[in-house]
Amino acid sequence: MLVYDPRVYPHPVLDSNHTTPTMSHHLFIVSPTDTPLYSFMHHSSKPTQVIVNPLSANLPNWSTSAFAGTLTALSGASSVNQTTGSGNLRVGGGGQDRHVIQMIAHASLDVVEDLMRTNPGMYLKAVDKFNDWTVSAFITPGNIKFVLLHDGKNDDGIRSFFSDVWELYVKTTMNPFHQLNTPIRSAVFDTRVKASAKKYL
Image 1 (cartoon, one colour):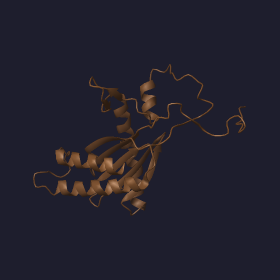
Image 2 (tube, helix red, strand yellow):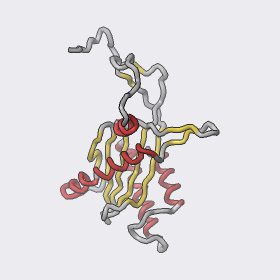
Image 3 (cartoon, one colour):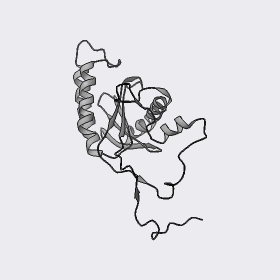
Image 4 (cartoon, helix red, strand yellow):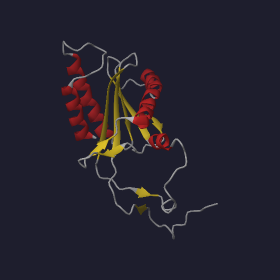
């Protein structure tokens, strides 16, 4: 049996790179009939320190699993970052990881609907957790569900973000050219959601 000895490892060890990881946020807007209306992925680079477990710091970082990409997505790590030819970092959007994230979001809808019966509030904080992913939700009076997967804790920012998205959603649905409960394809809506995510998340 391995016992932690504070004389050997008195404090958590910081990663030698002292990098600031990106926190992932995945927003899904779902209709009352569970039809996806909008999805959005945001990576925040707010500074946080990476703490590495001292016992695992010296172990190799490899996997022999055929499902390594899926397991990485399930653990909350971002394995979909790619560098473009111009040197810019392009974040995710496709592949296996995106499907796993969608599965987690849609699987959490059952928990959200159960909580809707008992909790009269619109903001449902941390309704579900799957490995490192936490699911928060916001329910509008019209029974539209905003589901946010996140891997960091920022309750006040998430609440403010949901309020902004709700206001943007109401303005979009009041547009006479938008049909209710159909996918949102408005570039203005998308731009404003991105600005709100950058501000609060």
